[in-house]
Image: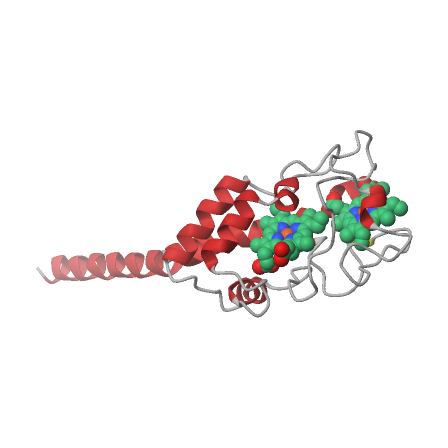
Length: 191
Ligand code: HEC
Ligand code: HEC
């Protein structure tokens, strides 16, 4: 009898422990799960190379070899379109150049404003920037989602041209993740 009781208690204890550890490991938070997918896109080189806080776009990602500032002394300039004589659109046309290492292209190629910085920022930092109207171009979260679905420079991240690895997923999937994140209260991770 005692043995049976011990066996039962042991079994029950195990079941509770298993349940607790499953809850801790798989903690389901639909908002944070959606954010993780969004962060994988926003922090990807195809997006972050243009979202920098200093004056230099970046060349990073497998196609570029080592990570570095944009070659040829390219800089932001007063309007994000480059210094006089080194305007982005001199080299960056509306479409990708066909050859490997040729300039990628999309209409009105230019740098994101410095306050929209994602380059080497943490998931928490990017999350807080995206939610902050003072730093996101005064957009609501719905407007952010639509920008990601419809903007030409954003779309380029999934059609980046010969040899460049595209951002994960698609514009439509990222749009849906932004809607889910927003509907769940747009939580940000702890770090
Ligand atoms: C060629 C440069 C360039 C690339 C590449 C680029 N962006 Fe941007 N991004 C910009 C510019 C410029 C703005 C500012 C547009 C405005 O405010 O009207 C911007 C603004 C944004 C904004 C709104 C403001 C904010 O930061 O919250 C989002 C969201 C965004 N981009 C998403 C993306 C995503 C996602 C990718 C990659 C799939 C990407 N961008 C790639 C240039 C770029
Ligand atoms: C003199 C020509 C030239 C000018 C001017 C120029 N670029 Fe580029 N850019 C290139 C070339 C060429 C590449 C591709 C290099 C490669 O693939 O190895 C490139 C690549 C890039 C990339 C990397 C995109 C990626 O794959 O993630 C970004 C971002 C970029 N340029 C932004 C800019 C911005 C913003 C400006 C203006 C402020 C600008 N460029 C001005 C020639 C130029």
